Every structure is written in structure tokens, then in C-alpha cells.
View 1: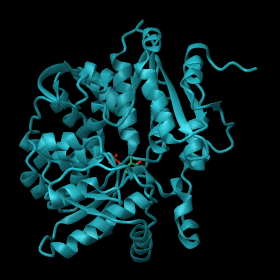
View 2 (view 1 turned 180 degrees about the vertical axis):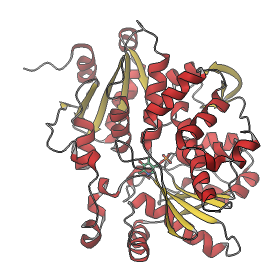
View 3 (view 1 turned 135 degrees about the horizontal axis):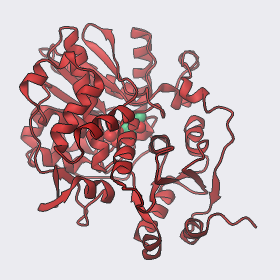
View 4 (view 1 turned 90 degrees about the vertical axis):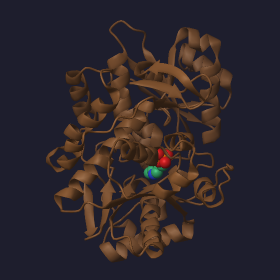
Length: 439
Ligand SMILES: *Cc1c(COP(=O)(O)O)cnc(C)c1O
């Protein structure tokens, strides 16, 4: 697989370079030069394959010989070692649970695959890979747990003091080994500014092999295609062939992967991009004008994104043609009041507790069905996180129904290991160079 930049179609880089650089110098995003179709025979018989088998087929079709078959198989079996069940709510409605990995969010697919791809490309004797991440919660947990114990890597996570949920903090700060957590006395934006400055610092770049683990890395996108195919296989086993997907969207990586799966040959009738009031994309599809805006805080805070970084990938997949794109992608927005009503509605109708992000995807299906009563496709809405990660949102009766998964109970009671730093870059730089100096 060769990749180009969305800002320079003539550029060609290897998969390895795209993985370690994350972003081209020209500030575009890497995209595969060729998106081959999976063979029709495989799609026709997909119900006979397991998730790891489907993942291998998709990854090897896309990556070609970048990673030899046996190595890729082993890598996938190690990375994708948890399930993604499409749970039936009624004959035509399914919730795709993507929260059975270590951090209880769909970001585990991307983070675990990326960490293992990076470890694979780090040959013996190569310099330690230093991963720097700023997080507002979910990304940091997935990256920390994704890289935990991965040889030849070290992860430094910056998170804003007092602004992540208790479970998120457990996931960030109880790891030890090759994971360091730093609590910043500031906001998420301060954390992000520190990381950006570190990447731009010549001295740090001379001393360390720095890399980011953010959601634009192509190796995070690829594994997210796997579960779209695997869902189609699950529904086919139930005799269903016509499928629409509703994806709760922030940076649009998840739905971008769905659309990549579509281009790889997955038969999908429609994608619905569901957002909160950070609605840059629904506004664009209505007006044709793409206008980003500063993000607003909502209950579905992992989707509080005013300038979705993966959107240019989606436009690129559709050759910038909004009319063709609109045939495949519909988009709706919902505010916090509607989100809460959605949570209550899913609970009342199906006795199912959905996290706020998941509830928005559900609401989008309801709305789509109202607008398109002739479409009788089965609808799958993606559940991107376990409800226990957002305890403050739920009314007491629903909150009491949330079961705490073993991934959390395993961490409870472990001592918090986090260093505290100010928002000054000089302190952070000193920390990276010398470690924490205790007075
Ligand atoms: C990151 C995240 C999203 C948004 O996914 P994108 O790929 O950025 O669109 C939605 N829900 C949850 C729970 C998340 O953590």
C-alpha cells in the first residue's frame, strides 16, 4: 500500500512512514493510493468468517505486502482480542457494541492495532518510540491500555486535572510499566498546546523519537473498517442483507472508516452521521458551506468537535463531490435535552442503557425512519462507549442499572500514579529531558 496526501496527490509514502509520521508535512492527511475491492466471493460468504478472519482479509487486501501474511495474522489476533456484537433490540434495530475492549470504547480497535503496527515496524535495536498524547478522556485511556507492555515504546499522557471522569482517570493513571500520566493544571487545550510545542522543539526531536497517537493516524482508521464488515456478517447470519449504519461522530474517524469499508466493497444502503450541537457536518450537508466553529461542551463530550479532522478524508473518498456523498451519507444533530430523552427512550423501549454518544446515534435512526418511511433496511447504531464512563449524565433509576465491567473492577483500588505539572512548556520540556525533580 502506498499513500498520498490529501494536499498532494503526487506524494507517495510507505505505510510505515505514514504510521510514524501521522501527518504529511503539507498538513494534509494520508490516504491509500489504491482502494481495492474485496473479492465478491468473500462478501457473498462473509457470514462464514470470524472477526479476526474478516479483519485479516480486509487488512491484507488494503495493505498488500506491507506486512507478511503470517505476521499480519498474529498482529490482528493480538490486537483484536475482544468481541463486537451487534445486539438485537427489535427485528430491524441493532446496537453494535464496540466497548468490550480494555478502555471500554471503540477507540481500543484503533489504539491496539496502531500500537502493534508500530511495535512491528520498530526493528530490534531501534531507538525507543516516545508517544505523546493529550487527552480529554477517551483517547488517553485507549492509547495507554493499547500500548501497555508493548516493547520498545513509552507513552506520556497529558490530561487536564479534575476534568476527566473517575473511570477515565483510573485507566490513565494506574498502569505503570511503559505508561506515564501527567496531570496538567489547566484545560485540555493547554495539554494539547504542550504536546504540539514538544513536537516542534528541535532539542526534544534530537533526543527522542517522538510520535503522536492521534485519531488521524492511518493505522487507527484501518482497524475500524473491520467491525463494519463483521456486523454485516452477523446480520447476514440472521437473513438480513439491507443495512444502514448510524455513527455518533466527532472527528469523523469512525464514520470515515465505515465509508472506507464501503469503498472496499461493503454493501451498505446508507450511513448516518449523528452529531451533537457541534454540527459542522450537518450544516455543510444542508448548505454546501463548510464552516468550522469553536467546540461547545455537551453531554456527549467525546463528540465536542467544531473542526472534524477526518472530514477531508471523507471528501477525498468522494472526489469532493457533495452530491454523490449525499446519496450515501445523511446527517442529523441533537442537543443535550434530546440526548437525555433518547437515553430514556432506549431504556423504556428496550431495557437498554446507552451512553450519551450512543443515544445520539439511536435518535438519528428514529429521525431517518420518519423521513424515509419507504426504507425498510435494518438499522445498526454504533455504541462507541460503555455507559459507566459517563456516570453523571443518567437519571438515578437508569444509573442504578449500569453494570461495572471487569475491566474497571480490575483497576479499582490500584494506586494513582500521575505527575503534576503546570501549563508552562519549560516545565514539561524539563520533565521529558530529566524526569520529575522532587524538591
Ligand atoms: C471518540 C469518540 C466518538 C467520536 O468518534 P470520531 O471517530 O471522532 O467521530 C464518539 N463516541 C465516543 C464515546 C468516543 O470516544
